[in-house]
Every structure is written in structure tokens, then in C-alpha cells.
Image (tube, rainbow, N blue to C red; front, side, top):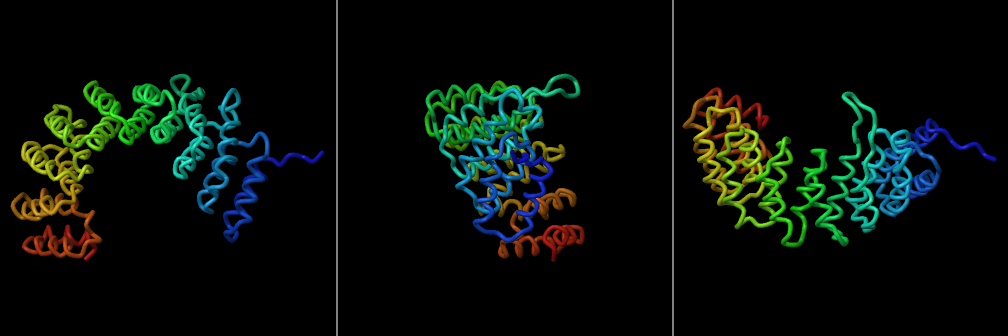
Length: 325
């Protein structure tokens, strides 16, 4: 009976595939590898990465099967940190894999490993990634599962569940997201994703609610609300953001508010930033120039910013540092 290849031999084969020319032989080699029993998680992770690089979408069922074998009692030993399962989940979501039952199983999976301070569940990211697919596939009971994931013990799961609810096609998502925003979260990223998803679900009805968070005494919530509004690109968000900046312009969160105004990417937001640049203290003007870095590829706005900075040596230097001229 032939000896089963070791993990080191599997890794060496994957290195050779990565260094060699791309082609159909890579997909065939990866498929053969994924059929091997008792694969280590790092091998599965690198195989998933290789499949992504070579366009191996046809490997989706084999990757799902390999991830399934890393669940259960031996998961912590064979795939510590869930690295293999996480890499596969990301690939399958990107490819639009349609096995809803597989994603539901992953969304319920927990992997307890020893850690500093006691046992730690390392499958949080897996559950969150699964939530994204579940929102798309909408299997029976999906909205209840997404609600459970929105209050998961892991913040990365909660953040992804909020993103997933932003993509949910039904009317059930907005009330869940609004409730979560009202209850709050220890992690600002979760609140940010929750508010962004609310605006994505129902911008007209939820805009005033998200804007109200700009008046929170908690700077983390103000920042989360500001960035959610900026990413929404809603023209109506500009004046609330300006008002918020005028109130908090001396606070550290002011930088994030200016970034949010730039993220709106509306003509009015750019006009305000360019006009304000020369009316404020030098440090604030430099912060505005930095906020406008997202327009480095837009020659028209680039020239407007250049012209607005020429009256100040400090602003001209900031322009050079940010835009490279």
C-alpha cells in the first residue's frame, strides 16, 4: 500500500504549482490533492488560494468537501484557527456557490481551542462569511439564523451578519438592523456595518435615524455613523456631516468626518471641501487635502485641489505629499 504523502510533501507540491506556469494542469493537480484524506488546514488554505488564482471555480464542490472534513471533533487539531475553512468559505462566496445547506452548517459551526484567558471559539469569521451566502441563497429559516448571527459572541460574525442583512431582499432586515443599532455594540465596526446596511436597505426612511447618531456622546458611534453616511453617497447626507464637523472640528473624530464628506463623491461635497480648505487653520486644511486623496486619479479635481493650495506653503506641501506632484 502506497504511503500517504505528508503535509510537508503537500506543501512542496503547492509551491511547485504556484511557481509553475498557469494552466489546466493546476486545476487537475488541485482536484487530486483535495481528494486526499486527512489534509491539514494549512494545505487546504493554500489549495483554496491556488484555486482562486488559477480560476478553478470547478473545484468548488471539492473545496466544500475538504472544508466539511475539517469540521467536527478533529477540527481544532487539523485546522487550528479555522484557516483552511475560512479560505474556502471566502472562495465559495466569491464564486457564488449555491449549496445553501453547506453554508448553513458553517454558520452554525463552532471550534473551541485553548487560548490565553481560557477556551476560544476560532470559527467566528467562518460563520460571518457564511452569513453573506445565506442572505443571497435565502434557505428556509435564513432570517432567523441571520438574526442569531447578528448577536453572535464574536464581533467579526456580528459585523458580517450586518453586511448580510444589508443584502437581504426582504423587508425583515431593516427592523433587525435598527434594533441592533439602538442596542449598540462593544465593537464600533459592527455599528458601522449596521448603519451602512440600514442605509442600503432603505435610504429614505433610515437617513434621519443614522444622522441622529452623529449627535452621540460616544465618538466611536459618531465616526461609524459618519463613515456609513459617506459610503452611502447620499446627497442629503452632506449638510448633516458639515454640521457635525462644525460642532466637533476640534475633536479627534473630525478627521473621520472630513473623510466621510469626501467619500460622498458628490459635486457639492467636493465644492465644500475645496472652498473650506483655505478658510480654516492650516492643520485642518492639511487634513482636508488628505481626505481628498481618494480623487488622486481624477485629473479635474486634482487640479482644483492644486489651485486651492497654492496660496499656502504648508498646503502646497500637503498637496505634494498626498498627490505626488
